[in-house]
Amino acid sequence: MMQRKLIVIVVVAIFTSLFCCKDDSKKEVEIVQSTTSSHCPKYILDQKENNLNISVLLDLSDRIEEPKIKEKDSAYLSSLSKAFVEHVKHKKLILLEDRMQLFFNPEPSDNKINEIAEKLKIVFTKETAKAQIDETVSLYALKPSELYDLAKTDAQNSGEYPGSDIWKFFKYDVTDYCIDACHRNILVILTDGYMYYDKTIMNVKNRASYLTPKSLNQLRLNKSNWKDEMEKKDLGFIPATTNLNDLEVLIIGITSHNDENPYSQAIIEAYWGKWFNEMGVEKYKIKNADIPSSIEKVISDFILKT
Image (cartoon, rainbow, N blue to C red; front, side, top):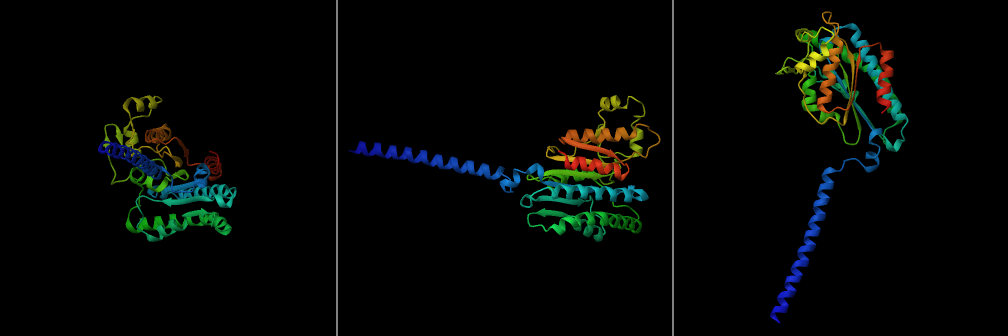
């Protein structure tokens, strides 16, 4: 009799253990699913490639001293807003999950500049009124010009331009600010292609966190074999981060300003292209500072055609 009771106890214990393991297994699966799932609803996630998350990084260095820069950059931003609104207007209202925002690095000292940037932060959802969508184009047609005027005044008062620490933006901010699991993530950078900030100067062998007209000339890549030399010496930017495969980048405004090297613009583009490849950016386009009507098509094609 005692032996039979013992057998029953053992059998019950085995079954209890099996069921507990099964429950634990379920819990473990649930935890994994909850940590890997997106924070957006499934119907939004299914439309990921149709949900635009456009970030703009403005280079407010001394490049904006040139009178034409404000005019061109303002026109580029206006074209960007038109492409964004064109995209939005072709979506069903219930599927609206699109945004556009402006960044600087470092943050300008003039709060008015930051206030304008806040006004240019656009978020469209199914709750958005049609009037807000139409207002976006007029906002981006007027406010960028005001922003540049403030930046120049700020520079004159302080004796220096805010500058642009693009390298550090990629190192510390681009993933948090510009990449969202529910969206097609696009970063537009308005810059002349030179990268320099006096508080972020690093060198690792033949790599650097900067490129200036002076440092470019010191590379002595002024012959037709510059590409071979660049590869041989492993010249380029120091990679700031990795795993940017969910980010697309459009650079507008490349201009060499360098009469000593006929290949300077091509070298600048090669530096950026190599940098993006090494950080995992799979889709990018690098364009020179052309007339706004030409760049408008470039922007439209990049934003509206995947």
